[in-house]
Image 1 (cartoon, rainbow, N blue to C red):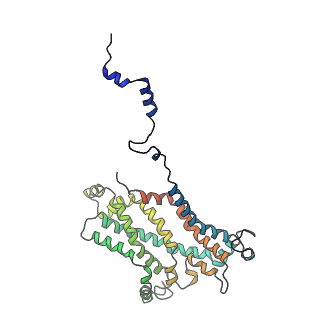
Image 2: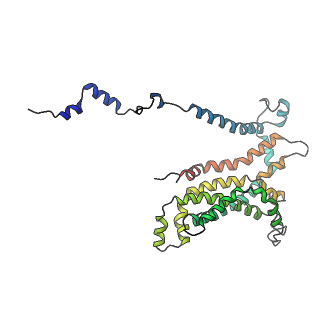
Image 3: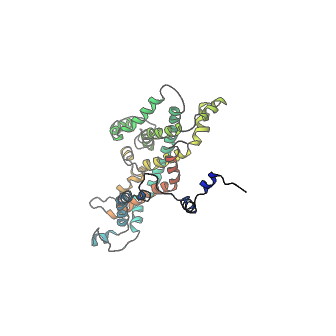
Length: 321
């Protein structure tokens, strides 16, 4: 004869209790003290706000595409706020030919690629110095680099123009005899003004890396350059990809500095090509819209190709653990 232990009976309970336990085992009911409808509450206000903001952002872009696809004759006949007439790519073809986009795209490459490479190289070295090396002025230099971003670049337009005008170069390097009308001037200014921002971002990223990495390398006899180039820099590839994406877009879209320092029309970047589409007495806004769309395509393609690295670089290391 077996004797049932009291705890066994308590654990077994009644069939109704067992049914309630089995039905509630996988459920996610509300917490104690929490309203029953709180669990299924939807963020309708947030979704509505995001939809409105997305529409505000996309309407001008959609309207520019719509205008670029319409011939000017149909726009003049039916009006801008109409859907009558034909839709084709004639404006894009004319804009490409009239604006000289082929040469100007190459000019943008000659400015953007060296600028981005120099920015990433110098900023990564500076970020390593202020985040991974303990010395007296690391925080001071980081503050100075960050504070430099607070100065509007246009304030230095006149001093930089005068400085470049009096900076003599051999005519084999510059046909103007100075830094004006050269890609060097634009690359130098873009690099100088973007290093501070990239240094700030990369230094925060490098601080999140384990200090044991460089300590172990130091014990093994690795110097500062070896620690930077072989250990820290490969671990910063997501952050470098994110910064490269941003800087390509920033420098590619820059209009002010090339227009200030470069006087020859055949050396200007593609962002200034829209000026070539302006008429002397009348502006063809359909043609200008097509030119603006052509100008935006490379930056959009670069962002779409590097979007995964861009998001990973901005979010990786944002939380510990």
